[in-house]
Length: 491
Ligand code: AMP
Ligand code: MG
Image (spheres, rainbow, N blue to C red):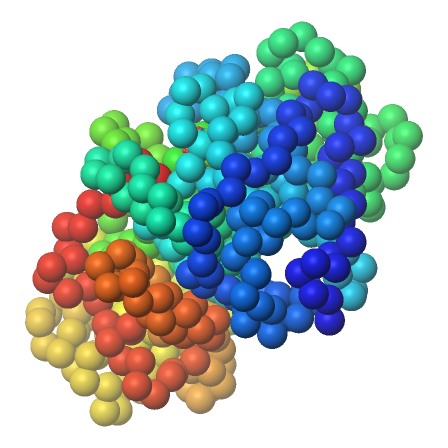
């Protein structure tokens, strides 16, 4: 296990032409301290988790002391934001410190967010709030442990520095870990500037590192890349939909070229099943609503395929979009069948799922609590001692009819009750990271300087499918005070 001072950085991205980045050191905090440190991820990366106790850790992780071998750079990118192309983005407040290789020979980007201005800052302060850093720390880890591809979070470093947002708020930095930070927008900038040689260099970089199965020099290599990328994107978006996750800002600069969920701004989870649910309160037209996400991902992919115009043919671009459509539908169907406990892909079962989503929407029933509980419904229509189901069945005749239909469907298409319950409980989380859970951890941090809730929440959400004694309140629906919690997109 390595010390933080002995990470042996490389930086393959720095081998690309200089237009791809600006080399730049972090602007450190005056008096940094560790807010959160994810020992489990440290362990996975081959970093000694005991480093949490290192009194100098915060200084190393905010750039106050140099990390040996790191060669920090701000990556250039552009992007389609709310349907409008913005040529001038790029890491305005984050730096790729470099890449480390873990004991399983996997290469990881270490990316520090909130570490000062860069050439791409556009007049903003280059900082991030403690609030948004905690949200990303908890959100990205929660998604990872649900099995949704995501960037990870190693550490949050706090400071005494205040920054202007809606109010003056403490600044923090977050150390993000991911196989890549290359976004759709990383390609778009070069395409729109008319620099096909840079588009090709980046495509070669991404294919070599993240799509090694694509044969080099193959004539159709770039087309295969488009399709492989479309497939990864489809799989991630299908999981978002099945787990009721809304990203909030699906601009192409927030779309990863390996299908990772990246950029945790005003994200959220559904409570009731509502296709029009919008987690970003600045998204007045609902462009990035829950129900729009699959179509937006396709729109973003279509924009992306344009960038590879000269490298992949038109037919290959069309193929990639068809791959996306097919892979999304298949993955989503498969996940939903598992969540409902159905064994085979049968038309009747799929129709039943669709109908159930309608009933959930009509009765404003909690999506996650419902799915977690229905594993107790038996094929004979009974549901034992489950008080939640009992209450639901008593609310209306419509639900009673639903229970009869579900039992009928289970008799046609499911494993015996105990086996099915086990399988359903492994895909329907008991714990969902609702906004009030992160908000409570944030308030304790901001108001009392108490960070213990942050790590407690992270640990609970490392096992979202297992019942954890004493954690019942984390499995409940939102309390009244949190029903209309507004998540600011100022971060
Ligand atoms: P985001 O909303 O985090 O996806 O950011 C969109 C773009 O704005 C990215 O290019 C960011 O680097 C940049 N950005 C956001 N906040 C700041 C900030 N406080 N200072 C500098 N750049 C920022
Ligand atoms: Mg972003």
